[in-house]
Image (tube, rainbow, N blue to C red):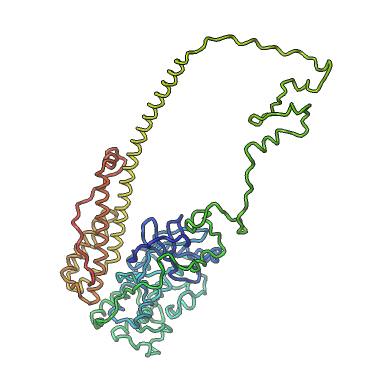
Length: 590
């Protein structure tokens, strides 16, 4: 979840995806086949990052398949150090994926802003990458593009590996033999020749190249020649040089065989590295350069709209209220002009009256009743205009005069009308009573359902915060806390599958780590660990507060008259949760 404040207003001139749910605000990045945009999720009131395939590549089956594979792969992988995918969809036949917005920079931007990273901080960052890659490789996926630019930084210091656009999933036939895919300097020797034959050890080579790049702030190139070019090791601490040589070996069998192996080695080296200088900037960088006020230049959205009909033809891509859905363009991009409809009955009457119909005089012009021609002259048609014997026929019988009837009393009619009105009034009152009862039940059920959905969302959000804040255990351990109780609480939370029970366990974990943090973190401490613990605890306690607010809102709805009636009739399920203690006071940086 992003730390950014919500937008003050939603613009009407920017595209929307997902039936108007996601409002694009500005472009975050642009690649060869897709763009990444910051968007506001109007359903969950959260910032998101949305990657959209450019229209000019939508017809390329290979690129489209690669984009869809990336979306499926990222959605299936779940780890605190991997960018999460929340939704996938298609707008105007162009696929997109909705991801968490990680808005505190990247490792590439960090070294570009501050220069070489201190060894301890660099190792801690790569330890997070090890965990991410182990999860990726356990799923039989090879990333093939690990580099500092693809390691995003969350505002709480967590690294997030992203961009699985050229990942290889087993089994896969998407990469042709002999095709090299990746980024120069981070590709292993075998990947330079044939990307299809690489395995997870190619990612381990890229991991070593990433560590070298953030330690030196230099451009990676030919790192497999470390032994031939000793100058490449300038700026690398002696304790880390053997690790890099092992990662960057030319032959894959000479490298480490898993990310877990690298993690174990780096954890052994970490205690011997010098402390980071007190002036070292924190890992998260301030957000900048992204306009999230809704006033972004419309030109930044041109790539996803180029050559496309911007009307909301299928409800997936629109421009808010500024574009009327009453206008639809044809295949040539023109708005068709519709002729006004004929007047009521006009066409019907014209068809009924034929100019060849033989009428003797204007007195015989027809009148129209529901489209039926009825001549005003009531004589038989065959006698019209004839004289003499031909006009003489059998006379029509004269109907008998009407028989007089006894007049009805006006009072009898009034009584009948009054009785009918009374019956209708009683019927209306009954209908209104039934509708009122149904409306009451619907209101109560809607209130409980809305409160329950809010509580479930709060449970998911709190679990996501705990997931992201898992490194706090290691940071508290470095500050002198015993890790065993914290790890036990974290493991208990991790084993729970029910989302609501998982949310309750997350509250227990937050209170446990909060107790340790209050004892060991100086409110004005400047060490890297103290800064990270304060940031993580602030985020965690905010999540607990939202969780308890949602729980209180449900109990308030359930205790109202509508809610009680809905629960009593079984239209809503009771939401029973243990009473929770108030959240710990957040540790905020002074």
